[in-house]
Image (cartoon, rainbow, N blue to C red; front, side, top):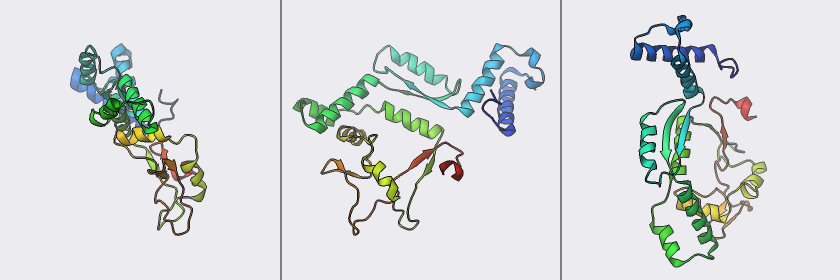
Length: 227
């Protein structure tokens, strides 16, 4: 487990010390790594759980929170955290999230949607379980944000990135932009609110958006990793 993921000696030592401290406090056993022959199954699970919690911290997406029978189980799971590498748990309803997304897309296209549904989308509470889960994951293991720029004074973007910022197939379409904004998020940098399309800056007098593009790198990434 340790050598396969090429962990440093200091990382392994931190895990060992944390497990030893926990066992000494909870069970009164000292220096358990000097007496591996006395280990039981619980000790092994505790070591694996500690490793996962540091190396691969997780947030649990606790689906179907809209069902009455789920509330008790979700509360029970969250009460036991952190455990087995999971540090946080967010209740969500995939059904409600998808229905809200569909309604926003239909509303953006302004077709096949009644006035009552329009009112419900605007006035009802927004299901934000997925949003909350993503925020939780980002907080647990924050990525390194890299902004590629062409000028260190104006922070204007690299010319070669314009295609990805305006014409890449992965960019959110009109319906998804509507969903993002109604959920409390923001549209991509080059999204034109009135025209509902992506419009790159084309004239010399037109200011280019600063820090338009961002690359999400793994924690601990270096400049060489970006290049």
